[in-house]
Image (cartoon, rainbow, N blue to C red; front, side):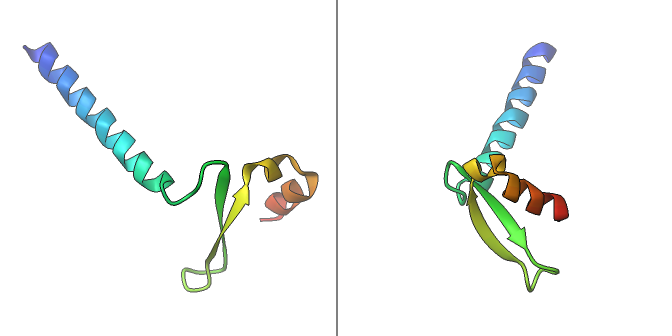
Length: 66
């Protein structure tokens, strides 16, 4: 019985984790990465960058400077 309770508890944790993850990814289309630029919360702007840009040397250079 204790094993069953433990398994149910673990399943609930996994379900909550999946639900939290799926809520975060809904706002970013598949194949894109959200990048936030700005000094503080007021100035921050969100940009959607295609994942294919991650392999570009110029984009890697910009990421390195951040």
